[in-house]
Image (cartoon, rainbow, N blue to C red; front, side, top):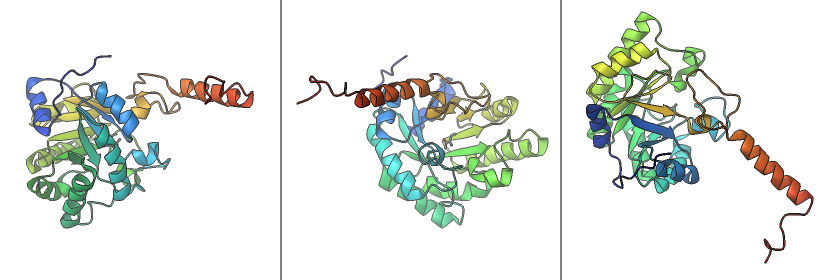
Length: 271
Ligand code: KIV
């Protein structure tokens, strides 16, 4: 595993530069201090405190229930861990959709109370004005298009998005709207690779893909999924870079057995 030797903190300016220089951008989700520290030390450019915490941390069926207070709480731990990476916090469902004033207020709360470097919002033209005002207020914004999980009830599931021409055309227009509004990068989730490649070519800000092929400026995965902790979750786009569910269960099993047969703690492990 290559360890990042650069000591300087990642910035949104540097992320933008990486598109120009053709350096691939790496993003992974993080939800707690301990794992975020390891991910940061391993050299990831951006730690995303995703609202996927609703599923991964809280066990909810979708991302809708997690609150702004809960996102801020989780982000604080990740910010304390980040020595190098940029920390981006997701704005949860309901914290930016009602009106632009509330959206800007929520975004400012995230930066002020959690210490995150930037926020991420789902949507295109309909939230472009809110994003413009956030950026003017000094809040860097990452956009998110394609399969936007906060709209799961509208989509009726987590299938591939923008495979039809009309939705693809809207996504391209949305990407341009986000670029114009001042987004420093855009996440593209679960869309055809050719469409992601086209958006990446057309917009000046970097694109970061998940299930969007290899033609984006960077990639993002959910940490617990790529570590193989969710054994049953194996969509086509996901590569499991480790298979940690089994070692965790084995270690816990050994602990349970050692306590039950009184071999733990030993004399050496006692005071
Ligand atoms: O919440 C999340 O984890 C995300 C990524 C899948 C991009 O938005």
